[in-house]
Length: 246
Image 1 (tube, rainbow, N blue to C red):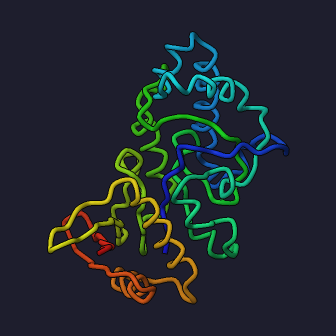
Image 2: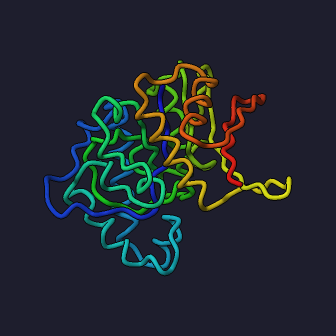
């Protein structure tokens, strides 16, 4: 089983430590793409603020992130499991899980392509929707390299958002996406923001299991055994696990 997580928008900057070592990150065959993109992000962040924010896919209120981005090459790096924060990561508590469980996780990243939870990275701010000079749209930039580097077999639990999934989608693996709904009086409503909490809870259930599930129905059984109401639905592109709150 492999769990694909999105990055968090908010990040906790490490206070100390050596800077990122691109060759030490998971899938070192991505080092060339990482080095090129890091250089472009640093350079763009040093241009006129309004234009830089637009190119990086950031809002006007995120101007302070440009200073952080300009220092990325030399900024202290820490484990990705602690750098990424936000609702999903607060519920998952990834850094507390055993090393063997963390090895079953990949975190999507607009800047690094993907990282493992124990990979050491600095805090950064970059949208996967960015369109950068000499790089272009980031999902398209990463797609060929990720397709060559990443495994495409077994069971994949995909908790990424659509823009990150556009950078790489498993073709041969059994893919299970996780959705969240509320249901009242027979009417079911999609949960938007709090789906992150649901995905964090589901990921923890799966990673804490004595034996990792090997098939979609085993995923549904484990999550149901944790006390949640679930429905496993098969579609053309794979499976969805719907978690229902009443």
